[in-house]
Image 1: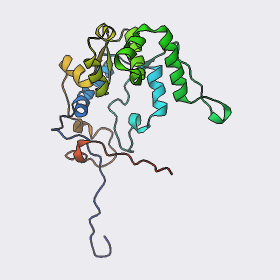
Image 2: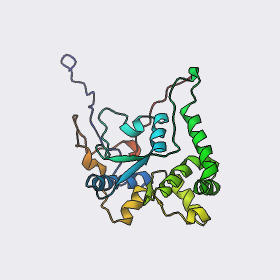
Image 3: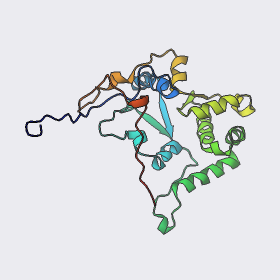
Image 4: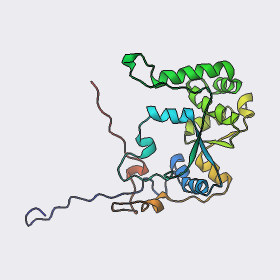
Length: 226
């Protein structure tokens, strides 16, 4: 109320991201995440990460793993994800003013070591190109640790691998590179609309019937630099 005048100022609420009719690669995969995380909670499947994958979180936007908004809800909240340690992994942390190398430079150094000792990594780089060396490292590590699949929502990587499936190293991989959609359909899991989870741990009004404009996450504002 502004005096005797009522002004519509809108309202704040938690809303789902994706429209129910969204058939994009991202939306289709997201709908299988509830089933995958439920299987992990029941110990039916085991989810793993690696030292290198954990290391990447240091140089990525934190919201990519924790959510950008205060009322965001993560389907992976409380899910046990064991980190498999790489014996070649090392990391130093400190200010560059004291001569400490950046995390990115250290990552490149570890990759160069693998180039000299890991034929699977070398073969994948030959198949996918030098720009995909980081992805090649993750896939090679998953292969060496006998994982059933490398689960990713990097659809460009999946398409790249499929286009090179006749390459000897790619063709001989035992570890499958799958999106959550491919994993879910392979095992006949049930896809769920994520709007069903809008009320989970909600300490704020929920507008479950809404979704973000254009059925996608709103863009993050980038700080301008001169």
